[in-house]
Length: 333
Picture 1 (cartoon, rainbow, N blue to C red):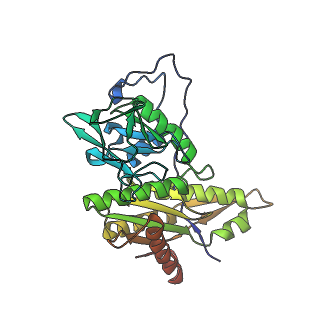
Picture 2 (cartoon, rainbow, N blue to C red):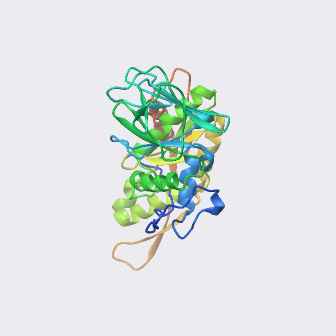
Picture 3 (tube, helix red, strand yellow):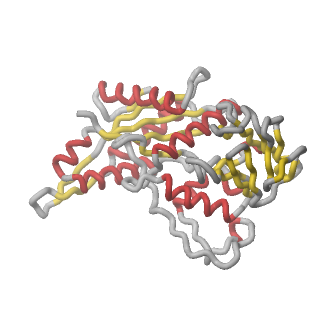
């Protein structure tokens, strides 16, 4: 019987209030109109996971297709868009060239460049023939794909983040969904390769978790999942992303982290989960039983020959099961 995976707890989903008649002007963070929207810890954590200083980065938000709502911050001041998997924003759609267009920060402005695409790059429905400066809310069309540009400190961009979070958080555990985690990991792989920065992942699984459901019931099992997630999340950094990748399996993306650093983080996660005491109801009794939960973890660092996000996670998952074979409640790399 194999244990289940680790979960990270995320604060409750953010609350959006009714919009006012006119949108608040783009301004510094402390000037935002809090009668229109509120940012809680979950929102700040989300923005941190979207590429470091996300609040201060211009970004694109995808407005079409299955990935609608995906946000692409301008990491290092530029983004290349196209069909090629080497692009920062890989768009699999008809009419898009392998390297179609680029956003580049120049002299305080963000410029849109067409990269000699076959079908052209359109800005607000006008095909561009030379680089154009972008402004908050501009629409960019590449083939059949539409994206909207948001400037630094854009309140609308934060609202999109909040709505996107509602669509990409696993409601049972409060951690990010598999889709969101894979998207984040694919993006971080591109950043790591382009900037020669390290990147690691951790897979975590709760030991003998099925016995919790069998002995105490599924409601208690849900409490243990959420509590273990909170414990693991408490030691993670703001830039780390924890997501649920299976029924009882979870993974963490660790940007700018070597294998040695990931091992240290995984060990801190393991200790945090093991030290938490759960009080669970005994079926047919008014008494509470004390339960301690352990976890097994596997760690992997991105290598030059590594392929996709799924392949990197697969390596970490293999090492997780090595931890199980060695007796559980440990970390393997």
